[in-house]
Length: 276
Image 1 (spheres, helix red, strand yellow):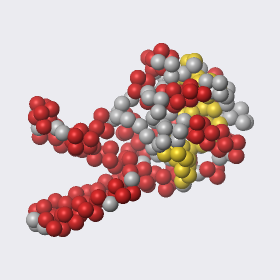
Image 2 (cartoon, one colour):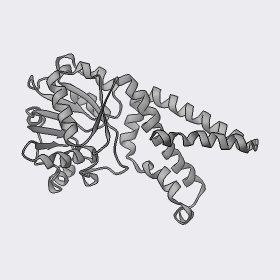
Image 3 (cartoon, helix red, strand yellow):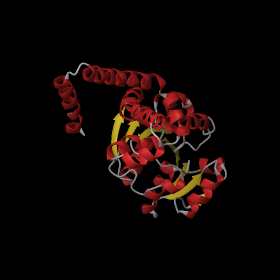
């Protein structure tokens, strides 16, 4: 099976590495608008071959889009002439706008998916072979995709070790806002608030594990996350308002010296780890 991966950064590169474990089953063709990414991906053996032509990618059995959401929506328009049995899979972080943007002529060919994984690093050199291992892979609007395409996508996801979950695209975007997108906004806010108050020497000297953990994802690509925030604006704003309400409650409990209530508020938050 020939697989074309469009986008050779963390997600696409890691996917290539994971699939190359099955060298007899998959041949990986890579495509990226960044020529340095192409050269690096080939050097790191993330793909078997680099293509400079989208037309060549269109001939693949499976096309996987591991690029930002806006770019996915844009490139979909150029994929309407793919072969009838082809499968297109996107890894976009917000799903409803992508799902609604797919031309009807290729809707059966399309699998809208979101791997719930990643790191704060980006580019081909960030790729790791087990990025998808034991991580959730959300497939949205399964019923809109063809039976063959669902079968092929699920085989690929099983091969890379993902745990498949099915969800409506609109439902996914709301959940992703609370569980993924809002925490990134919070991490950026933590980093900015500290940098505006503290000098770099103090940050280096005093920043412990807690601060490093909470600020780690603030290293993530602003280009990528601006795109995600824009695409999921409504749900993200709802999640930020909910977070702000909790922060205001925490502030008030401290101001009022309501230590017992503050303790209970913290204890209630501990319940999250009973679920995770």
